[in-house]
Amino acid sequence: MRRRVIGWFILMVFGFQAFLVSTLWADGTASNQPVAKSADRRYLDFGDGTILDKKFNLMWMKLDYWQIEKKWLNWYTANEFAQRMNNKKFAGYDDWRLPTPEEALMLYDRRKRNLDKDGDKVFIDRIFPKGGGWGTWTSSEKGQQAVVISYKDEGGQAYQDKIKGPDAFLRLVRGPVS
Image: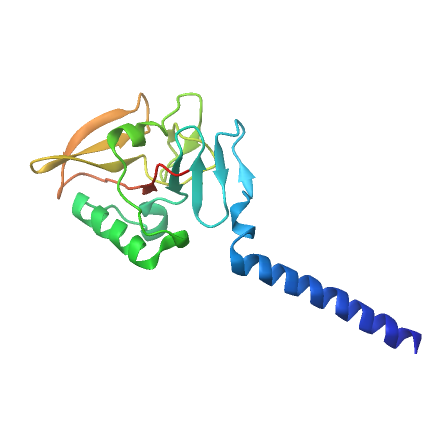
């Protein structure tokens, strides 16, 4: 009899915990807490595929296009990818976009070390997984060219052909967020 009472008690306790956890997930409160922080506490990883830059109030996709699709993309495909992520409501949001050159450059930090898809050094925080592209397309365009930001070496920006831009990458952003 005693074992049966203990068994029911355990079942009730674990059942309540499961109810509590499912309730937290259903209303989204669990996802509002970061699962990781960068060493300098500037970036928060929410465990849903997003990274919040607290310094500039921008939310970045944790993975870039290369890490998701394993291929390069042109500027037009980059814009189509942003629209696809919005249609899917990636991480619950529908306002993903290409960053401006100024926003993209905010990720570059010469004091930070990470590795791109080829194992070369890029200067973005390690809260972003290694193995991504060395830069990103931006929303800035001029005729048949658009700005690409580099996270390699000295960083910087350059105009590339929107269709034939060599080995171009993309990391989407949203915000500023509050």
